[in-house]
Amino acid sequence: GAGVSQSPSNKVTEKGKDVELRCDPISGHTALYWYRQSLGQGLEFLIYFQGNSAPDKSGLPSDRFSAERTGGSVSTLTIQRTQQEDSAVYLCASSYRGAKNIQYFGAGTRLSVL
Amino acid sequence: DAKTTQPNSMESNEEEPVHLPCNHSTISGTDYIHWYRQLPSQGPEYVIHGLTSNVNNRMASLAIAEDRKSSTLILHRATLRDAAVYYCIQGYGGSQGNLIFGKGTKLSVKP
Image 1 (tube, rainbow over the protein chains, first blue to last red):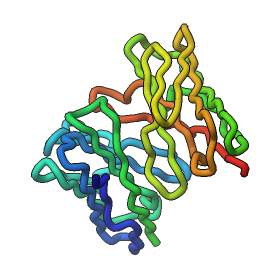
Image 2 (image 1 turned 60 degrees about the horizontal axis):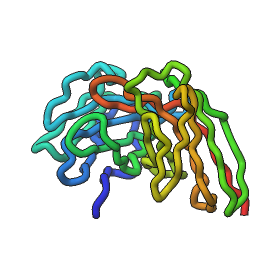
Image 3 (image 1 turned 90 degrees about the vertical axis):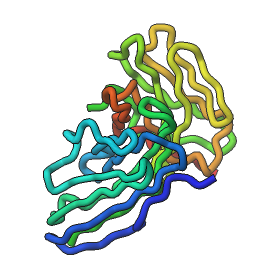
């Protein structure tokens, strides 16, 4: 069956531009996670959705980062006024029926900010 | 911060067993031990998890020490496709169920 799909797979942008990263989770998975993987910081958690709700946004690195999920399915991570330190691979994962279950990851979006 | 300690790297020969160790000395009674792996240019992939007893699945076995302060992921016959970074994860980051990844062990498999 279809896994977690992320688009685009690669994104190159100029400093100061806004970007949107998309995640399409496995059908029926109610929990959705965003992580970021960079050389300096390893793999870090950004935000969690249960359905369309994100109960805690404290993992987002700054107020330039926002995320939403609609229809309990697709999620979008938006980075405004991108900076070079935002360059990383952004990974999305989903799991069945909520938190604390096996997470299935997408291949990620590699973001490069020039 | 990650609560587990793993060797930075390990090498194995193809078709031989591999034992990947992990220390989790601060583990609580309700923390599961999870293993994920990340192949080059891919997202992490679930391997196995357990609480107290040893666990087996089609990918690997997980041997958990009696005091639960350490565990070992066992790949019974390494293949070239098993070359990846293996992450041992203790419990969850919080009620949201997020995983806290450390640096993992980079496994190289020689033909």
